[in-house]
Length: 441
Image 1: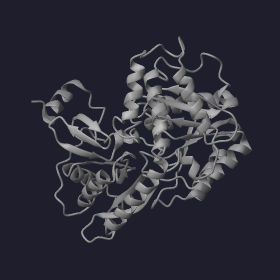
Image 2: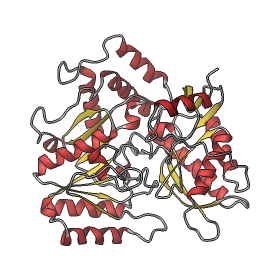
Image 3: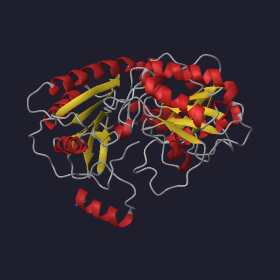
């Protein structure tokens, strides 16, 4: 019989240790918000493949669309023989773009490809080299995406030198002493001391930081960035790889602030479990690149495009924007109740929009971040049948990414397991992590 332990031994011999996994369970099958491992154990999935499964595992409409496409063809390369569903998906995304005026979309495969190509487009459109990102940001693991990412360990250590003309400023985070005013002062200091704003192509920001700790970008920060971009001819890129496609109660997270970006990076839940990413941008900006300057062999796979069109239908027909908001209210209420309960671990800084909810595990006496405590909570949750992820600078943030299609019963079951895991005196399972990090993205 195949077991998690036997697969772990095979993995150790076959797979490099540089790829980490948050748990030591090996998946066998999954449906909606439930997953079964190779030993037959059932888990409630509050990770969603790291925000990939807003419509759940194997949604029937996604699977039907994929099956129909598989019966026709699997690959031609859009640069060789283009196909209708790529064009149809671009049309749908252009209509949803969170900015006024004409839009165009190009499709890729991974989130890192989306962020890198957004930078390429911005540099061509502005004829400028520099890009400004934020501390704590995560924009991918390829070389330019790693340079944009605002965390050294594990994403940068040993991988340099990185592409030049990438600058970082602080991001407002709970309990850090950094607020919007401090971030903007740092930006103005950067303009005065290190880079002429006339040489800056773009500022890139996540509306809610993912790996950085589910920190919500304050609306006043986003508005100020828009104003500075307009004043200096800089393009504003929003990385919606984790926040997009109904997770926050809006199609895109930036919509909560009412700020219009120039370029939008999308991936993860757009493909409903199939690899797909893209950049949606203002048409004049997108058309700045000459033919052949953008693309990729697998970019905009016809199978993934079929899945994405079905995902958009599911979001609309099953009213997942409203569902995200109602689920988020339920999750918040349960976490707030746990924070007031005697015997719970220290809980602070509950935050997020819609069903993209995070909170910190802290020392109950000092209020300092407790990464070990968060890892213990995740281990106890796994032992109770709940897949849960942490993130943040020290791994102190518990993040919840339950599929928006989860039934009320499954959501309640998962929240009950979370309740139990938040008891400080609950027995902690031995750490299930493989490698030195969980699997953030």
